[in-house]
Figure 1 (cartoon, rainbow, N blue to C red):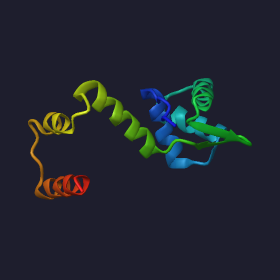
Figure 2: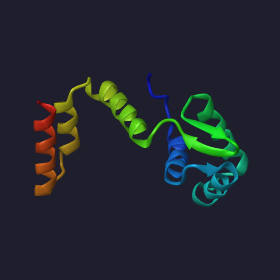
Figure 3: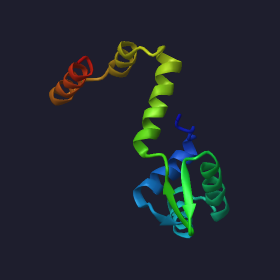
Length: 119
């Protein structure tokens, strides 16, 4: 099963949902008003769209995710890798690290990830 596309404004909503789920629709609408400056109608429209695409469920006025934050992030990264880097991890790492200085512990963590991925 592929992960449904979550667009940028929807992702900001999902961040709130993931931090608070399960949450009543009315409560998340209040949070979205405060944090995103959305009207109640906008929030309910986003809930409806995400529900239709299988990102979340609404049961007894409570919203909860079907797709986790980690699944959404992996899906976005996979799409980025395919579209911009021709699925080349070295090309991605080269672009990511260009002009940046890594701390020693960051470099070690990356080295460990690369070593374990190669096994």
